[in-house]
Length: 365
Image 1 (tube, rainbow, N blue to C red):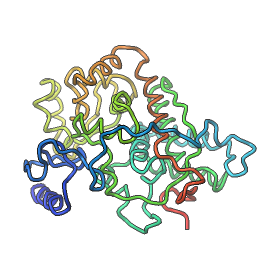
Image 2 (cartoon, one colour):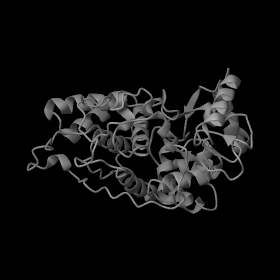
Image 3 (cartoon, one colour):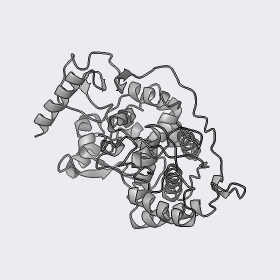
Image 4 (cartoon, rainbow, N blue to C red):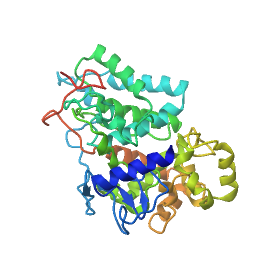
C-alpha cells in the first residue's frame, strides 16, 4: 500500500510541476519522505516551492503587528471590541483542557504556528467551510490532516465569548491567546508572552497552501527560507523549534534517522516504535514541560526530526548551545518570538475579506 501511495504522489508531482523538495528526496516541503530518488523530480540544488513559485530568498519585512494592541478587548471606549472577560474565558478553557490532558497544550501551540504560517494569523486553519465553498481547506493539508489538536478548546472558548460579547472577539485572537496560555501553563509560569489582540478572521483556506509549513524532514536551507519568507530571523527559527520539547511524534517522521542518533537512545526508540503510526515523546527528560531540554538533545544526538538535528550545524549551534546552557535565555527568546509570530499577516477591520466569525470553523453568511 505504501509503495502504491508513493508512486501516486510521484506521478502527481511529475504531472503537476516541480514538487516541494530538497536534494533528491521527494517531499511536501519536508513532510513526506519517500524511498525514491529521481533527479528529474528533484534536481540537485532545487528549492522548495510555494503554489508553484520558487520561494523568494530575499528577506521580507518584519511583521509589524499594525492594528494590534495589548488589552485590546479592555478598551471601554470601543463599542465594537469591548469584551473584558474574553482573555479570562480563553485562559479558563485552556487551563481545564491541559489539566485533563497535557498534550492538548502542545497542540494549541502548534495550532497557532500552523495558523500564522499560512495566510497569516487569521484562523484560516480552523475553517471547514469557506467563502469559496471549497472543502480542501488547510485542515486537509498534509501537515494538518488528522493531526491538529485543541480545536475543541477553541470552539468552547468561542461559544462562551459569543454568549458574553457577541461579534466582538475573533477566532484568530482566541487561537493566539490559547497558545500564550498553554505556554505559560506548560512552562510552570516561566514563560509569559505579551500577546496583543485585534486580529480579524479570514474567509479563505486552501490545503495546498500548507506547503509553506516546515516539516520534520526539512533541511537547514528550507527551514531558513521558510522563516525568512515570513519576516522572521534564523534565531527565531531556532527559538521556535524549541517547542518540540513537548508533544508526541509519529515514528514515521524519524525512524529513517536511527543510524544518525545516539546509539543507546536510538535503541530505546526502536523498542518503542512498533510501527510507523506509533507515537513517542518528542523530548524524553521532561516531556510535558515547556523548557530548554530540547537543545541538549540536539547537541547529544537525541533529536528526533531531521529539522531538529540540522540545528547542530555551524550556522546555528551557537544559539543552540546558549539556549541549552544559559538559564532563562531560551524562555525570554521564546516569548519575543511568539509575539512576533502573532504579528504575521494579520487582518484588521479595514481589510477586504476580514470578519469576526460567529463560529470558528465556518465563515459568516
